[in-house]
Image 1 (cartoon, rainbow, N blue to C red):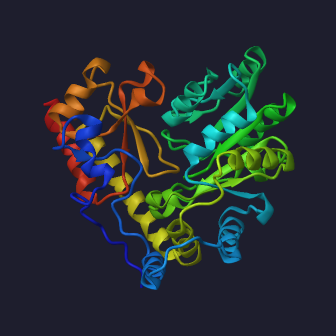
Image 2 (cartoon, helix red, strand yellow):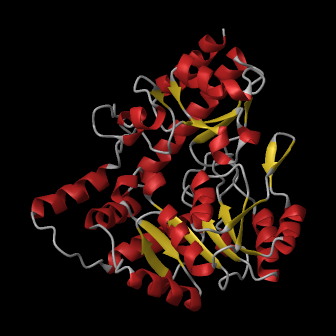
Image 3 (tube, one colour):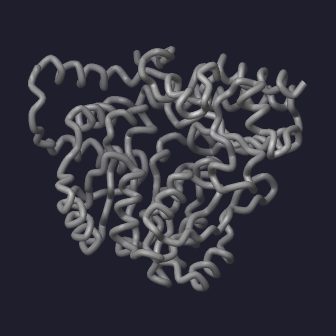
Length: 386
């Protein structure tokens, strides 16, 4: 029977734990940042990689049909999305793919829309590629983040938006969008011929009641929509540098192929292909147990905040393993780093990373770790505030 094994990852060249000094200027922090699990991968992945290592030859690799079949079966079984093999393209990660697609689908000074607070590489990619960043902030309705559809269409028209980057499930607020929500914004994009990149990398980490809906399945959007996903968040394989770019549009596929051919980016790392195929073929039991752990960690964290810091706002975590918490009732925005990092000694993703000063009272916590770390986080915050 598959077990989920917690690993102490200090002194293993792990960026999450051993990169604290470089990222935060301190190495004595409790690492609750960056979306990286503290769990061993499924046994099937380890066995597949061990078998390949034992072969002793690591030359050029011919990607087998079974790799594509494993992914297509996973999408159909778990997400009701029937992906055709000819649609699938490679990227070493979702973030590189976003940057490449920005260059492929837009020109310098074109407008690209995002919905803050949102994963900060979206913003960084837009600005680094000399495009105009257009914000359509999410709004809060009875403690639930929602898309501002009216403002979305207004911004599309007024700012002549060429591309929309969708985050689904949404990082960092944890929303799993409904079919109706997705269709509302995609219909607007179709109406105005706005391209859409759907970042669905957290698609398998859903712990709430709502089922995750793949954007590509809610209507006919093949000519404008590219879906990005990976096994990296699902099975903690980020170091394997292997992501999927799903492009139903022949026109966009041709553009993508020409762009990657110009860089001679023809394939990925063999270890990544092998790890991903093994995970999709045999990792479901492991994933189910990990989701149970994450859900338990979230419920316990929420309970502790209710007891110790009851005015902190813990937002519902329908998807991802990243908790979004507003500490504004206790800490001034300008004091967040001093209290959370310097006094409580916790490494977090600070809210202003996801959209600026407006979110500076927020923190994002990684719950894919052992329960003791989650409890210690809340205890340290309470002690620092006292």
